Each structure stands twice: as structure tokens, then as C-alpha cells.
Length: 379
Ligand code: P1T
Image (cartoon, rainbow, N blue to C red; front, side, top):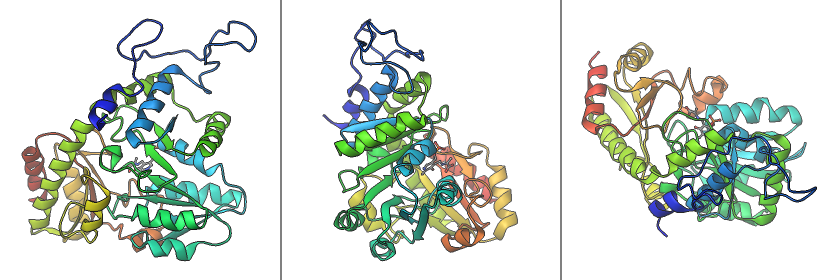
């Protein structure tokens, strides 16, 4: 079955009790049992809920995985993966990650004696060099947030497998429509379903997809034990979102490519970061491991921070807001918004400066979006 068909049908059979074509919202915390120890598959909604279960099955199918598990946010999914570690264990992580992920690693799990070594993820060898006898997890995003750098998933997976270390890939930026980390050798895929999977900026959620049964059982245990699970309505919203994922991703990507090319030629723009540009240093890798380049574009302006501030405050269609992946375009200032919690020296190393702008390119008309940016840059 092709991706578009799976998005609409996988796991989404008519409701077994009523025949409802669309999965109902099972808005219940608990399930009445037939007799002690005898029930219809569900006991309590933290442990399992039919609406969530349909979403978990559908997401697994889209990522080409066997098992899916859903969470109340992307960070709840990340937390659940990290809870499988023990004090003294170490993580090797790509250094360019969503600011909240860095905050979680460096300011929460560090308190439990779980140390993270950050490496420049553009060279797989850097992961290998940072591995110690205590390393239990390799964590990477690709494309990264916000610099749109790439990590070679297949190359890193060869390293992780040879050392028996779990490789977890945050696939939020690409979405399963453009990239399938499990096929490339990852053990776990994590998503903020808040973004492209939900697609309409109306829900916060997370997911984990994986193939290994033992690992699945372990994550499932932690999902229930920790309790960062989504409600039925939120699960339903994401389920509705994924039905149009393919159509949306094509348009996001088409618009983003046009905008990146427009920005690249603009005299006030210093640098543009988009994997679909021929000038992107990892364009070749992008073409190999992705089937499209996504809807995120970052760029730097020549005229410094005051002008940058003016630009981000003067777009009309691009809303100044955190988050990404919705149908509407957003403009973001990573230095003070999504990456505000990242230590200054870490930001400086990545190039998250006060002239950096990140765009989440929506699915509006591409020329309208370009006009909006053109006017804002005329300031
Ligand atoms: O916000 P939440 O659903 O908890 O997801 C966290 C998260 C995880 N991974 C990536 C790559 C992300 O971009 C995010 C959230 N990011 C934003 C809110 C943002 O504007 O970048």
C-alpha cells in the first residue's frame, strides 16, 4: 500500500461496535469489565484507549514500523525514551536540536546523573569519537532545528549497531512522508506530532515508533508507568491531520523551495539554510536519505539584529509564533524564542545568532508568501 492510502486507511477500520466510518473519540477514562480480569482489551485510558490505539497503529504504518506509541507532547515522548536509561549512562547527541530537547537533556536528566555529550552531527565519525563505555543512546535530529543541517542516519546506525547502542532519530522536521529513519537503520523514531503530523496548529502531541519487540515492550511499560499519554480528542485531531499529510507535505516543500530560492537571491540576505538548495553543503545527502526537503527554511540577514527584529515583526501572512508544521506560515526568532534556553556558548557554536530567522512555510499560495517577505525586507 502506498503512503497516501496508508495515511487514510491503516488501522482505521470502521468502528467495530457501531460501524462509524471515522474513528470515534472514546472520551472515557475507564472501561467496564465483564468480570474480574475479563475485559474487551481496555481497562484504563492511560494504559490504552481505542482512539489512541488507532493513531498508534496508523503512525507505525506511516513510518514503516511495527509498533507506535503516542504521548501528550513531543517532549513527553523524549522523556519516556530517556527514562529507560539509568544513572551513570551517557547520551551522545547531535548538537543542533530543538531548544527544549537540549533543556531536557542538560537541565533535567543531568540531575539524575545522565550526561549528554553533544557533537557536530554533520560528520558521523563525531558520534563514534564521543562514545564511551557508558554510552547507551545516540540521539539526533535531521534536518536539525533550526539550522537545517543533516545527519547521515545510515552511517550513524552502522556505528550504533557495532557498539550495541540505541539510535533514536527525531523525525519531526521531515515527517515520515519525506524520511523513514527506521528503514535507514534507526532503532527508535520520535515525533512531535504537534507539527506536520497534526498539521493544523491545534493540538500538542508526541509519538514513538519502533520495530524491536523487546524495546517496544519496554517503552510501553514506561509510557504507562510515567503517564505522559494524550487524551482521546487530541489523538483524534492528530489522526485527522495525518490523512492529509502527503498532500500538505508536497505543498510545504514546493513553497519552501521557492522561498529559499527567492531569499538566496535577495541582496539583504546573508545566508539561507534549506536542504533543497544546491548550495546546501549536504544537498547530496538530502537527496539520498529524503524524498523531499520539507517546509522549514532558516536564513540570516546582513544588517544585524535591529533590522532582523523589524523584519520578523512586519510580516503579515507569516505569524510571529513558536512551533511549526501547520498549514499557516510562521516566522520565528530562534535566539529568543525556540532556543532561548540553550546556553549562549552552545548557541554561538551552532550559529544561532541575533540575525537568524526561521520560517515554517505553510501551504498558502507561494507567491503571496514571497510578496509578504519581500515587503518585510523592504523595511
Ligand atoms: O512541543 P512538543 O510537542 O513537546 O515537541 C518538542 C519538539 C521535539 N522535537 C522537535 C524537532 C521540535 O521541533 C519540538 C518542538 N519544537 C517547537 C515548538 C519549535 O518551535 O521548534
